[in-house]
Length: 427
Image 1 (cartoon, rainbow, N blue to C red):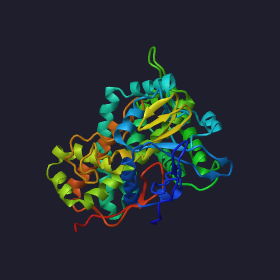
Image 2 (tube, one colour):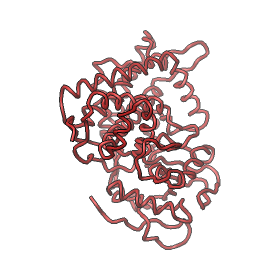
Image 3 (cartoon, helix red, strand yellow):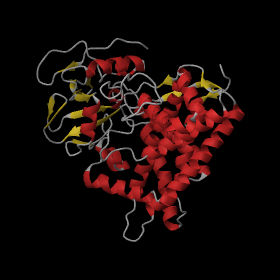
Image 4 (tube, helix red, strand yellow):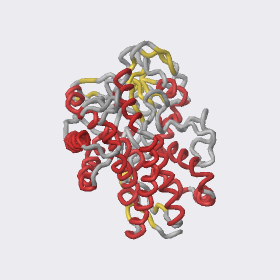
C-alpha cells in the first residue's frame, strides 16, 4: 500500500509543523514499502537537526509525549554506548510494558539497566561454557542439514515456514534442552506472541500475545523445576543449577529470558534468513560470488544481509540526564528512538549504502545493536545459523530462489517476513 507521508514532525518548543518530514508515529508510515521508508530516512539524515522531534497522535486518553528520532549512525552508536543517559527502563519497545505486565512476567534483559541488567547478563554469559558453545556449533550444522533435507523432500512452497523459521527455533530448543513433545506448542505460542508487535490502531488491550507469553513461560518454568532436580547438561540446566559461588535465574527470570530467546532470537534470525534469500535472488552476481568461494565470502555475506535487512528496526531509550546529541539537547524524561534501519544506510559510514555488496569492508552495521551493555547476546549464534543454512542451500540446491516479493508484516519494530514463495528450479 503506497500512501503519502503525512506532516507530523515538529520542533520541541517552537516552530510550525514541517510538512516535508514523515510521520514516524503514525501507522501509515510503517505500511509504506520499505524503499519509501528508506527514502524518508535519507531525507531525515540530511537535516541540520537530525535528532528531530515527532509528536504522538491523540489517543483515547489524550495526547502522549512524543519522541526524538536518531537516524544517523554516529548518533545511534553514541546513545547506545552511553547507558547512564539513554536508559532501557522502563522499556525498550514502544509502548513500554505496563507495570502490571512487568510484575506478572518479570523484566526482560532488554528493559533493564545497571546492576539488574548486569546480573542477568552475567548469569546467562557464564552458562555459555566452551562445551555448550561447541555443542551449539555442531547442533547448528546438524539442524541446517536436516531442514534442507526436509525442504528438498517437500519441494517448493513457503520459505519462511519450511526453512527460515525452523532453523533458529530448532537450534534454540536443542541448545536449551526443550523436549521434542513440547516444541509444537511452544512454536504456536511464539507465533501468537510475535503477531502482537506490529502496527496497531487505537486502544491496545491485553490479548492473545500476553496469554501466549504466559503459557510459554509456564512451560519453561516446569522444565526449569525438573532440571533443578535432575540436571541434564543443557543450557536450561546451567541457568537454574548453581555452581559453587554462582548465581542462577529464578523461575520468573527464566521465563522472561526464554521468551526473549523465542521471540527475539527466533524471529530476528528467521527474518534475516528470508531477506537473505530475497537479496541473493535479486543480485545473481553476488550469489555467484558467494557460491564460487563460500569460505571466503560467507562471513561478509552474513554481515551484509543483516545490514540490508536490519531485522530490528528500532529500540527506544529514556533520557536520565541532560545531554546534547544530534543537534539537540535532551532532558530527563525525554524518549529517544534509535532508528537502526536508518543508521544502517548512512552514507557517511557505508559508501553506496543501498547496494548489496558481500565484499563490503569494513561493515560496522547496527543489526545487533549499537554496542554498549545491550549488544545482542545471540549475535554469534545468529551468525552461525545463517552461515550454516546458506552453505547448505548453495551447495545442495543451487537452483533455489525466491519467486515473488516477500509478504511483510506492517511493523514499526521488526522487519518481519510473513511468507516468501520459493522454487528449487534454476531460472
